[in-house]
Image (cartoon, rainbow, N blue to C red):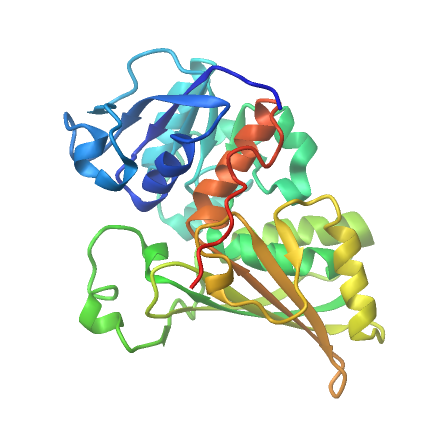
Length: 347
């Protein structure tokens, strides 16, 4: 493994994604965290605000002050683009965990996020940070748009078969409450969420166009630009747990395939993907807790001929901070698994 002495910064370290970035990066053998910013707790030491991170003497700042080699932005959309543009102009490599640079069509972005894009000129040069699909592009990137947690689970579930299924797809996903962020809301209040399960965003979730963009691109690469448009129905649910996403995807196969054939196809597709594992049994969210793994169980309902794919990950690791660090490793020439080889915590 290459040993580097690269300085990295975290913007908005006090949000859940920022907290997880700090946890993983502070023990990363190839980089050192030299600066952290926050929209709250400015002037306090990181160890005061987040005691579980140990004795770090980093002080939470308003802005990055010194030179850094790479910055992670865990700011919300719009605010992220404003800060990222400044960093890119200063020739700092950036990995953005917001949605600001994921969608290539600025009109689609502004429709779904209801703000004018602060830096549309950077969209064409951004790379979608899903290493399982864009490893070579990420290695050369200066701006990586790290995927959303729901899209990661759904895209990885469907990518191997996107050219073998009909365009009508259903993705049913369950997420832990940390996916809603750290800000207070009635929906995630303990007495509202505990012992409860609710569907939401039935008119369309903001992650939906991200899924359609990437799956359509992959489908056209395999089938040509005239392939039928995808009709993807995505329904997310909140469940009373802290971490985890479990997505169950349904589609009809264009031709008959046995469960064994489908399983071999997935194993071949992800043979070089160190964090995607094809499981023997349907995975559970506790099987991924705290790890950068995505567990996938593909099968076929032989009675109906319908493909069923279950995808499971930790929304704060593979769905956010861990995946961003996976991209960082590629950008810096490190082994993809560096600093991310922790096993899940169970139970």
